[in-house]
Image 1 (tube, rainbow, N blue to C red):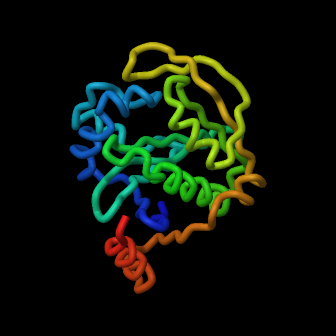
Image 2 (cartoon, rainbow, N blue to C red):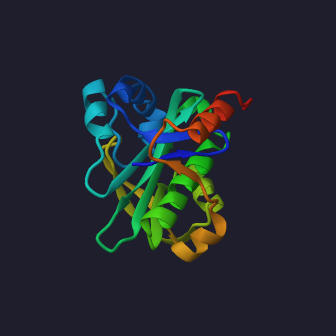
Length: 197
């Protein structure tokens, strides 16, 4: 899977070494309870299993100056469209990182994987995620119930859609690399590592 570079972040595949920090950040009730599939409490063993993407899944770790801060990605459905999801450790809320990272992941999906469109949802008691989706260009299309693993029951959610044409108009192109050992890649990493945020 490619690695992506945004203005402030490195998006890379999750690694086994991320399990402990993933469990600490994503296992936080304030984070896990706003996702459909992250349990609470979240053990390191569960985290290791969750970090392995399933068939059709593209999952990126969000890294800020060498530190894991969240995750973003999508799941490709049989139709070809993809379901977008993201989470961010509580210490980094409200700084635009979820929008920045998810925008890059979606741009990669449309431009490199030819994804025709995206769906996404957020629980009605999580308006911050709705704000992220609207910034990305999503439009609301419905409402229904989605299971929350952390809460242990269905939760009312709003569902959104963004087609590829609109995504191409709104989402930035991203710098994607498959090999980390290139001069250009090292220059980008140096730029991110030294950037004041």
